[in-house]
Image (cartoon, rainbow, N blue to C red; front, side, top):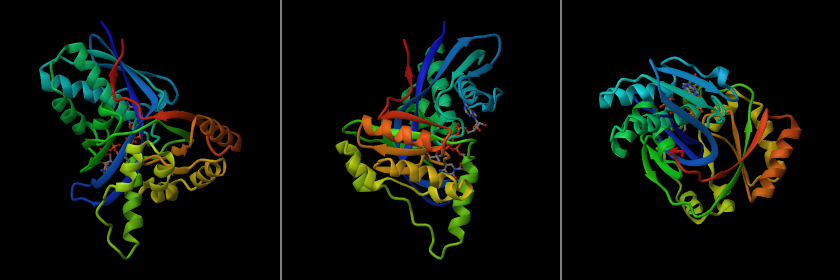
Amino acid sequence: MTVTVRVPAKVNVQLAVGAVRPDGFHDLANVFLAVGLYDEVTVAPADELRVTCSGPGADQVPLDRSNLAARAALALANRTGRVPHVHLHIAKDIPVAGGMAGGSADGAGALLACDALWGTGATRAELLELAAALGSDVPFSLVGGAALGTGRGERLRELPVGGAFHWVFALADGGLSTPAVYREFDRLAAGRDEPVPPPVASGALLTALRDGDPTALAATLGNDLQPAALSLYPSLADTLATGTKAGALAALVSGSGPTTAFLTADATAARTVADALLDSGTCRAARVAQAPAPGATVLG
Ligand SMILES: C[C@](O)(CO)[C@H](O)COP(=O)(O)OP(=O)(O)OC[C@H]1O[C@@H](n2ccc(N)nc2=O)[C@H](O)[C@@H]1O
Ligand SMILES: Nc1ncnc2c1ncn2[C@@H]1O[C@H](COP(=O)(O)OP(=O)(O)OP(=O)(O)O)[C@@H](O)[C@H]1O
């Protein structure tokens, strides 16, 4: 028997970052939106725990026990008294180290797939607690749709979304390390006179999401990690400018980057922006995707 779970990528439509906490994490007001780019995690019984990976960037994904899918299987087995002898296969389509929660998606996918394979009977709350222990973005990968994440981003309140949003994602060469981007955020903050304000979700942004209004959403998008990502990867500014010139309603760095995200008015505008980004040579690839997308889902 095998179980396959499909899990979406995310873009942060608002990422408000507070000061660094004593535990090294930052308090966030993190408005997640799941987008229609997916990894698939397939689990099957095996003689020992084994991870394989295929798809773009698969060579950069660790196949040992540091892989988030492996860690998820081990955590669930430990919690429910199972032996974690499974083969996990990850079919990657979410850019690796791209700021779109690819590893988190695989962690959430493996949790749900192993849960279904083993019939653990774990509750949704237990799966969410295990997910939060794996990483700040992992609970959202389970939930999908749109949600406000507080704390380090792991405490979720699901949000209503009133329509489809059309996005383009420009994939960059190489990746950015999430801890390095947060460290750069701290370095830039230390150079300013005012302390970092507490992170607060924008009411106007939540209304724009609820109304399914891309123009209003474009006016309220924001990513406090963007200056840090641009500082570490300055040429992203050219990619952002190219998409804006091609008619995107708004352009921003996705999470910790280096993927850049472009909100467009409709599917036609999305295609135009994607073509312009590709022609410009300011990115490695451009992908069109709709949001919101459902969270981790067992297929078949
Ligand atoms: C940038 C985002 O993707 C936006 O959704 C997330 O905040 C990062 O989430 P993630 O990759 O799941 O991060 P984790 O695996 O929990 O943490 C990795 C590292 O990122 C930094 N980190 C992460 C989340 C947070 N609220 N504050 C942080 O400072 C810490 O250095 C931490 O050691
Ligand atoms: N299943 C996995 N898929 C991809 N990377 C993984 C996985 N498990 C562990 N990693 C490690 O995590 C690092 C970050 O990869 P990931 O694709 O999750 O980045 P990201 O999308 O920028 O993350 P986030 O948006 O959550 O900050 C990789 O460089 C890799 O070493």
